[in-house]
Image (tube, rainbow, N blue to C red; front, side):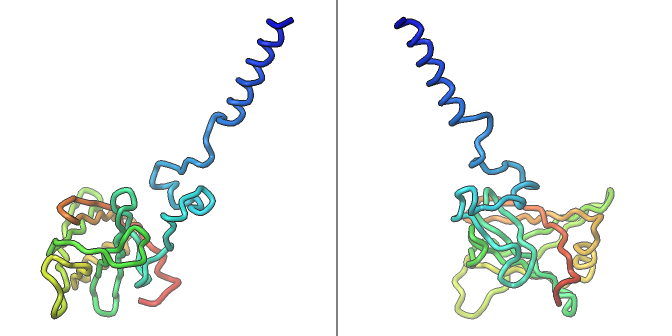
Length: 176
């Protein structure tokens, strides 16, 4: 009788553990970048990582690292310029880099191109404290609007290299 009760207890305990753990932990966020944007940060316990769909300047957000930083890419079609703003992990506040230049690398078919954006400095700004980079280039703007072009942003923050893919945004719902 004791042996039957022991087996029942072990079976019940094992079932409880399997039922609690399950085959997949729904609290675990997706690991690939494509599905990252598709889940609700607040629902999976990552409120501290929640960030807006667009940046504070209404540009396209680029994730850098494991959301250590973000970059916001803003197209100014009227001025013919592209500006990149460095942002913190929440994509709400400015982040800073010692880099005086950053790069956007493009590929359309077999044709690679690289564009260099320079830091915009203001009077009184501390050296190595850059957060805004820009380049006036109609060619770069046209390439970023072309959905067959892939674009990658490359930069260094605190001596560490970062790269992120610049996604195409729907430019029909807002003014530039």
